[in-house]
Image (cartoon, rainbow, N blue to C red; front, side):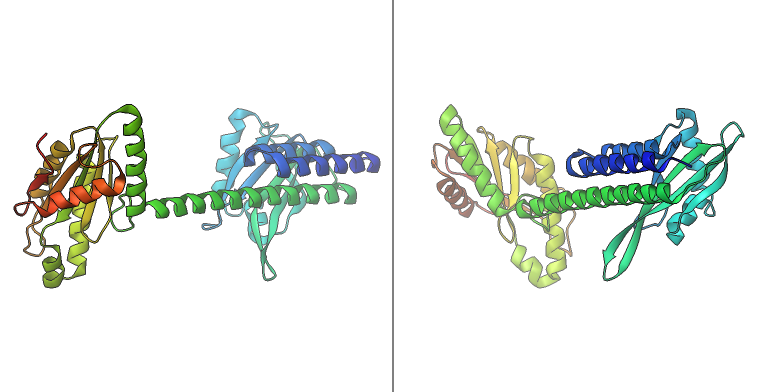
Length: 338
C-alpha cells in the first residue's frame, strides 16, 4: 500500500507522461513504454507488460515488457499463449481485471500480480478490449483505492495509445491503397492511362533537358473484339492479364508500361530501344497458349522523341499511327527505321 500523497503525485506523472506520449510519440512501442513506465513507477511495481489483443482472432500477444529479464520474456509470452485460462487471457475475454493475484516468480518466490483489461468504446454503446496491462510486485502487495484509480488511468491511456496508432496505421494503409488505385489499372495491375501520360510528360521534359531519346510503343491485342464476342468477357480478361504479365516481364526497370484502353497498352522507354523491347514483348506473347481456341498475339507501333514529336500527345499519336500501319497480327511498325 502506498502513501496517498505519493500516489497523487504519481497520478500527475502518469497523466503528464500519457498526454505527451499520445501527442508526440513516434510509434506505439515508444508511447506504451512512456505510459507503462510512469504507471509502474507511481505504484512501485517491479515488472510490467502489455499484451495486445488481435482484433480478428481474439488472441493476446505480448507487445512490451518493463523490468523483466530478457531470458524470461519468451517464456512468459509462451506461458500466456499456451493457456486460455491464464488470468491475462481471462482479463481480455471477460474485460474484468484482477487487483491482486498470487504469482510464482521465475525463482519460485511469491509475487503479486495485477491484470487490467484495456477497454475502449467501439460506438453504439459497444466496448472492445484491445489488450491487457499487467504489473507485478515481489511478495505481497495490497492495491488500495488510490493505486487502483491510478492504474485504471494508466490502462486507459495505454488503451487509447493502442487505438490511436491502430487507427493511424489503418489510415496510412487506406491512403496507400487509394494511391495505388489512383495510378493502377485494377484488372492488370499495370499503370493506368493517367499515370502513363504523366510519366511520358515527365520523360519528355527530362529528355528535352538532357538531349536524349524516348521510345513510345503502343500495343494492341489482335482480334480482341472477336475473342470477347466468341468466348465472352472472362476469356478477354484472361488474355489481358496474360499480355500484361508478359509486358511487365519484358520491360526494363527504367521503363513504364500501362493499360490505356480496352486492349491497348503503352510502353514509355527512355532511350531508343523501343523496337527492340517491342520485339521481345511480341515474342513472349507468341509463346502463350491459345485461349478458348484463339491464338494470343499483339501488334505494335513505335515512335521516338524527338524525331516523331516533342510532347506526350504527339508521340502517342505517332505511335498509334504506326500501329495502324502494322501489316498484320504480331507485327511491329515504326515511324521510321532506326
